[in-house]
Length: 36
Image (cartoon, rainbow, N blue to C red; front, top):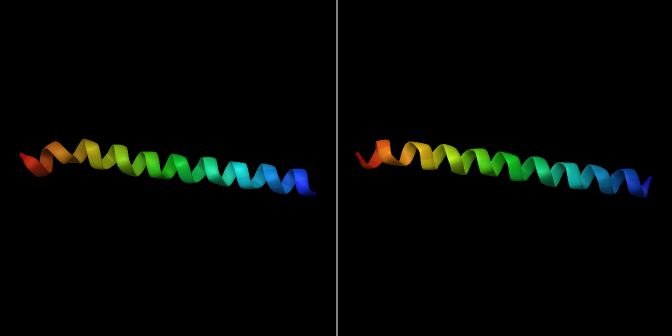
């Protein structure tokens, strides 16, 4: 049970990282439009 729970936590952390990365890349992509 503990091993499965640990895997779930790792998977959730990876998902959070992906979401954050997408948000950041989206902001970076939009940045020139806001400046220009």
